Image (cartoon, rainbow, N blue to C red):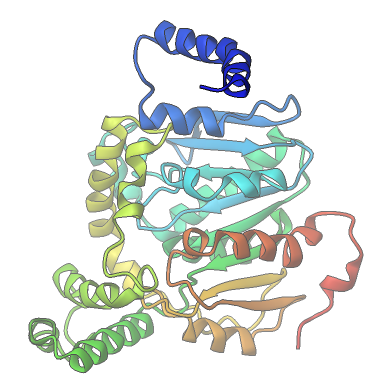
Length: 374
């Protein structure tokens, strides 16, 4: 080692000793979940980081509140599924949003950690869309009061867009604006478009196994009952051809994300699938009849984030609905390289779009944005 190298080594030595000592005091190398938790820790004194449960609609439901500045507007995020909680995956994309918003996620009844709080037999009878809507309204009121806000921004993803849109229609006074990500407009239209996409791709590629499976349930949805088994076959191939995550036939990063979540332990991770099975069976009949096309007037600003390659909740019906609806403000934003998991696939554009088109409604910024879009 030359003289210069020895000087650098001496300068670094105290740091190396300190680092080694710190590691030894821990007794072990940190695991992935611990590293993610340390990285995501909000240390700003003006920030907020709280996980807690609160009784909503007679059921304990977990809330997760994070933000770098408690003076920022609140986003209430309504997760998809049914029963696919966003809390154990939020660490993958949410941190930049927390610089400009306080983000509230919650595990819906019978979802994730909320599933563990109530006997499944006791909660099963309450698993109806109207009850989920009432829960969202109650949570919006709760967090507004707790954190001293007049209103919140409401964001729904996938299944959560049904809840979110209905909550906005029922109580527009609680929300500055509504954002739909992977918006559901008409479930049967979605199923048909998704199936047609998957079959067309399979025929194009000569995937005989896929064609055989899909032709066995055709026409889909058709006039036959839309069973869970038929849905699985239809979704399987649409998602295989990138209808869930753009350009991907696998999406393990999304389903494995809870394994690194600081908010979820092993028992809570297992509860995701348990809650999904319970909830889907209970809400499927209502879910299949969802049709929001008759809504021609919306009481608050509405912004739609649409994945160009989304064939889980296809964006075409959303674009058509948005053209016809009358609202104080409306905007459709295309995410060209995203499918259904918009916030994971294009997190930068998600942040920029929220800042540009949504946050001004909750601040004292100029009112230019509030003019209706053509």
